[in-house]
Amino acid sequence: MLKNNLNQGFTLIEVMVVVVILGILAGFLVPRITGHTEIARRTQAKNDIRVIEQALKMYKLNNYAYPTTDQGLEALVTKTMIPPEPRQWKEDGYLDSVPIDPWGFPYNYLSPGIHGNVDIYSLGVDGQPDGTGINADIGNWQLK
Image (cartoon, rainbow, N blue to C red; front, top):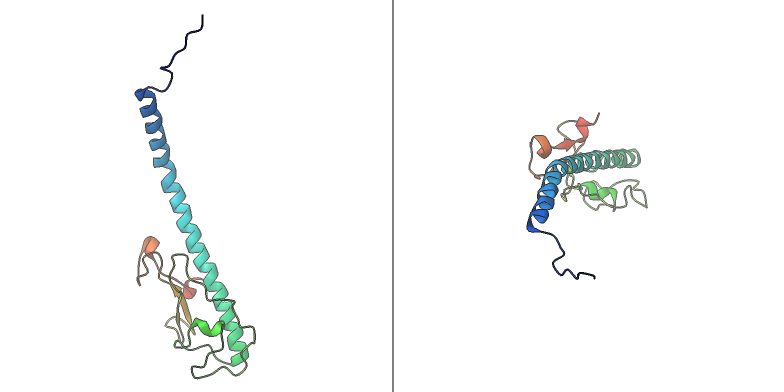
């Protein structure tokens, strides 16, 4: 005779054990995953800065000077009408678009720079100058 048991399922204790195990696993894994995400974002910012720096060098080779701070990085994408106008601006530009940093902020640009001919930098996670740790600024002068 087959017994039809309608009370099949998980007990409260079994469910609680699974929830505790998942909580313990999350406690170990989440900090490790978020740490790697931040490392990847900082690496992406450094790579973006290197690409921008190379485009600026090409701009200077063609036009004998870097774009001014007022002209900004947009001068690498479209020909600027802000004086001094570039003498031999490359028709296709030097970048397809001006990248934004991995935290959603525009890259900062100074010409002449404080640390060199030009400064290209991201303000990091917090978008504020002079942070420390994950909020630390990332600039082209640090990449040399």
